[in-house]
Image (cartoon, rainbow, N blue to C red):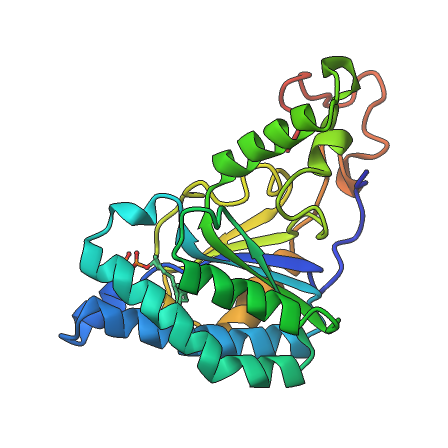
Length: 258
Ligand code: FPP
């Protein structure tokens, strides 16, 4: 279990909601698809920058379970872009020591896309420098439900089910929980990304549109993270020794869970 500590300057695991591709394109009078294409270019650079900084796990929200609601043309454009992006960048990512993993429900994606994603996983499985998890047809609630289903299928009884037991069935059971959760594009919400895993993630919201996000923006987000005191529900270093009678003791509700 995590305990309060000096925040290490580099997060072990960064999760990113890559928002703002459409607005980036609109500002340039370009179709939304070109915004997504520029988003892939930004992603490739950010993967490299994260690996260079010693980040071990990077998880990106590439396609959410809710993105099927987008116009058919945009959905099929994103699927094609994924195939093009993998064929264009996989060799380089492999050479750079990046291991690709997929989190999400691949049952309802096309055979072609599923095959490309599983092939990317298989062909990079010996890499260890950075684990890039591509969340594809992923939703945080889906993840919790599928973990419960797997736990039931494995014969776990209710009284044997605790946080550690359920975590073993979550889609990203191989990764530590995200330390830093970044969302670009100016929106301030989680949008059903890594709900279980981000319980104690430090949240950083940036107005930068995703295609403009680069190594400098990553460094700014990491610096904001490093300046935070992570308390994991404890009082933290500034609160130690203040609990004597007569000291300014917070009510039970204000001191918990922050
Ligand atoms: C949100 O921007 C972005 C997405 C829904 C897709 C993110 C995908 C990439 C960066 C490319 C890599 C992934 C694939 C599938 C190849 P938005 O379209 O909601 O932007 P807006 O809020 O400005 O409209």
